[in-house]
Length: 111
Image (cartoon, rainbow, N blue to C red; front, side, top):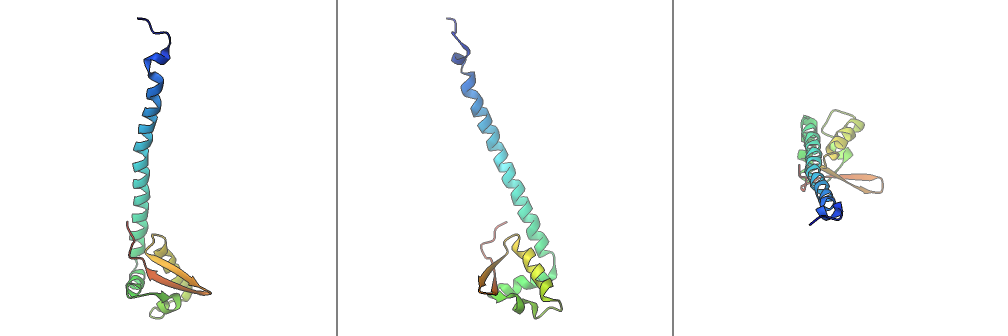
């Protein structure tokens, strides 16, 4: 029996499957890279003793940036920069009420 055309060989139906498999292999790799980047940001945030002290204070409850700055011998701007570094890996959450910013420790953080 001779084949009338190449579509009967089923070549064309197999190609999209192969592409889908390749895409599935790339998806976990991309997720792994994103997870590693988040881990890097988390470790960088925890590397500084000032940021660890800020997290320790926030673990007791919500606080404003001005309250966080009181025990440190640094400007409010410097403490705000530390807080922003803690916000990148989602260790700290910010809630705004008018002009006041309230910070809290994010207990659902996952690396």
